[in-house]
Length: 421
Image (cartoon, rainbow, N blue to C red; front, side, top):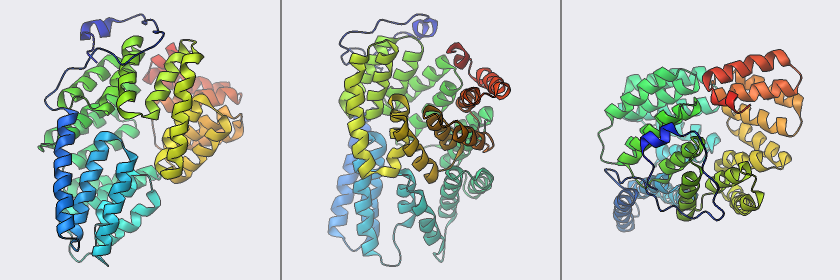
């Protein structure tokens, strides 16, 4: 999608009309220094080589681990849950070839990615049971354990672990972890500084990590209502890796928020055509519903729901959060509550508590909603979205004082949340 000039975008004040039958847009984002197809081709070549070596050396567990690593890298570019299943198969072969040893750190990383969080710590302990650990491996264990503690709602433990990982082996990854930690604690300036440290430390040839850091900076701006700045970071990400759906979806999101409806729809439709991602179908459905066109929204809702239902069977832990967003948006509320409870049981962090409060609120379980939102507010997790949720929960529960307080906090951090009132 060729984006309108930055001047036009940033000056936009009115929304485009909803087209009757939106099609993938004729516009295109600029081609950057690397393209998604080039990055994917490089991974495919590496994967072919790894598979050939694994076939030649089936008793070498590291050969199978190399296959798993390549497939996981491909999954990061494609968003394919099936790729993660292929990675698990390769790791299983590696463990068969290495009884008593094997790729425990790679297994922990895969389990974390798929939100199989109960499986992560045993794998990390298996890594630590080795006789000798180099600094980078020890730091990787500390970092992943810190990520895990943050998801478990144990922020103080996460701080200690991630700081220790940074001291042990300061890398782009350790800096990114600290950036995320500070972001979720509300220290936005510090988070942005750590993301820039991550940028400066990365000297690899893979363009995806560089694009990812720009994307995170844009997501911070988006969360705090700085749409123009968010778009600039997304375009920087596109310059690093053009054609990457994960960047393009956020370009589409911010274009819509800035009033460029037809451009956003065109880009979303193009992404759906390439990825069949249900979250993008949801985004299109929301645009149509906002335009009072439920007839155009319904096919996207139904298609997305069918995909989520399949994913919940095959990859339940990885799917709870995405499917929850769908049912919060489109109902029924009872299903949203079930998913929110499962999601919170899996990773009881501040955001999971907030989503649980949203689900209870929609299902008119006001007492449970208050309990959940208060857990989120005392978790150390900070965001304007959390304060917005708290304001609505307290208002529904009849606590006008707390509702007004949290509405003020939400609006101070993201004025667009007030504009929507």
